[in-house]
Length: 273
Ligand SMILES: *[C@@H]1O[C@H](CO)[C@@H](O)[C@H](O)[C@H]1NC(C)=O
Ligand SMILES: *[C@@H]1O[C@H](CO)[C@@H](O)[C@H](O)[C@H]1NC(C)=O
Image (tube, rainbow, N blue to C red; front, top):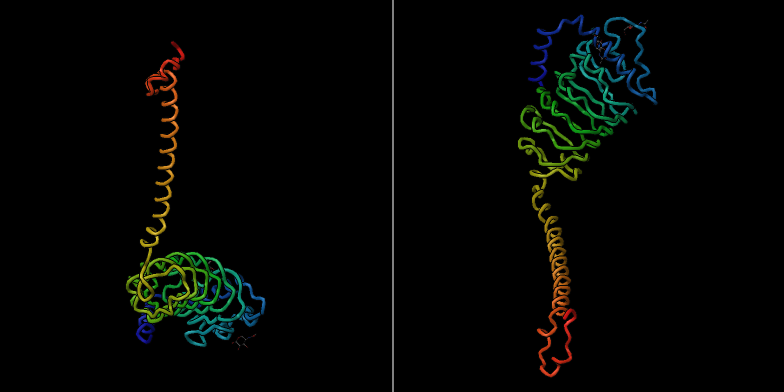
């Protein structure tokens, strides 16, 4: 964490001028307040009438790099009853390192370019919401990420391979209680089973073996047997019917061939004699 923060400090000092940073951070919070439903009035302190530098640092849930500078370090908006979709406005809080939106009523998919929106994020907590869709593979580009909590949402599909390949700093990962499926990428298998629990389709270490092939075979076999039996039945009944008709016709036209008792021969008359 210290190392991450130091690297980010250096990046920020070299890359961003503080002026443009703070103006856009105010825009970021304005956009968030606008886009999020707030039935409990949890963001009532977010009043944008005061334009003193650093005033946004006193808003509920906002922590700044320095109290006298309107530059957001972390947003802690957990358990506020917030509604709506993932707030795209966060991309203008361009120096933010931690975002907590946990235990709200947020829904819908995560943006595909989430890494571009939160380039310096080290901690992302979206747990206990109703986010859905696939976890975007772009998550793998959030290279400073050390804590990722996505548990108790409605995510579907596979865990992206990029998460396993590129998130080398990850020390906490929780995707429990979603609807994820498929194998757990190799380098994520170092996390304990409870972080993956509650997903019916996830498999591979640290959970049970992937049983995909076995399932397919079990399912296919009865179907195949069923078809074969049906074919056999069809063939034999058609064969039987054809045999009957042929036998009947032959006996009709050549009755003498079928009457083996000599004394009966005089009583046998060919139909078309
Ligand atoms: C604006 O914010 C500053 C810093 O938080 C505070 O000292 C000042 O009283 C505020 N001004 C108004 C008009 O609310
Ligand atoms: C970010 O800020 C720019 C102005 O700097 C603005 O035009 C844009 O709409 C903002 N983006 C979002 C998603 O709010």
